[in-house]
Length: 118
Image (cartoon, rainbow, N blue to C red; front, side, top):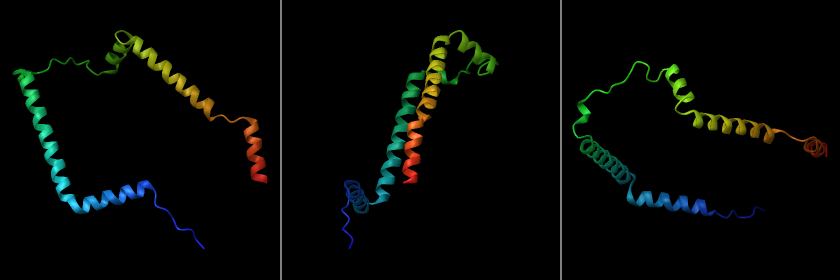
């Protein structure tokens, strides 16, 4: 005879959320989301226009070397050398830590072999 399954808190929450969506209507939620997105876009555009003060009509002065590998290397090894070195050390420590955590000891291997054999 099976024991009755007790619903978890997450299942109750999911059911309540679905019931709420049925009551309110998914269409209303979609309209509300789109209106919120449109309002956020309008506020962003107004703030950008007010803050730019007519400077949006000027062209940007971008050199041909902008974004090239040589320019990126020059920036990493001059202006951003400290951040570059700290990042490389953090990545090295993460790689070594991953290897150490992935290693298994002989005792663990023997224990697993005994469990499989038993």
